[in-house]
Length: 110
Length: 113
Image (tube, rainbow over all chains, first blue to last red; front, side):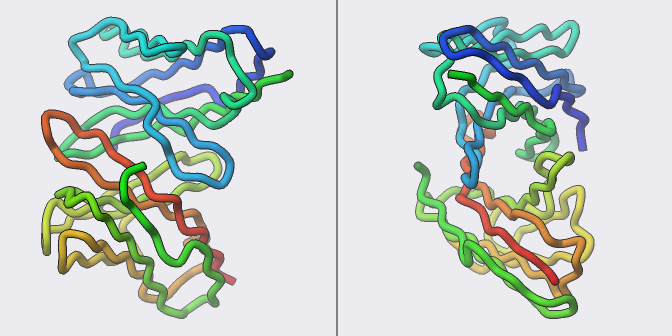
């Protein structure tokens, strides 16, 4: 499969912005995704970006895509305690498959 | 939430016993997937299906088999469970309408003693 890299842990104070980074390998990926996993739950689709876009904003979420460096980031504005979770980036490859990073745990400090 | 259920949600079994996990969807999506999630590894694809009776291997398929006899059900079988198969198993579905967005079930926590 593809190799998607993420840093493992981030702590942030409530109300601050948090930024999660990811690098991916397949320059032909059509879409790149961010998923959120809360404790004991499945993965919830947060947002995605089409590969021909540089930026996508969705309420408090901003996704930035740097295709040259194969770098994807997710910025969460005004981070809330409910944002505490593990965040996974994923890239498309092959026949309708996704390759996931190892996840980045975000802890929001009140 | 997409209509995906997994059963059982929790299971404890012994080494060497067969185990079958079920994924059921009500979305009529074409693609279905089985992943396992382990600390330090993220999600890894076990098997996937691109239609009834059409399946293919993922990156960690050894020791697992799957079957899809109807659109709504995708079964994952561990023929002879081993302790290394202790994990959380997630099912996902997608419908290729210009993208490959996958929607996940709630997971099955399996412990092999």
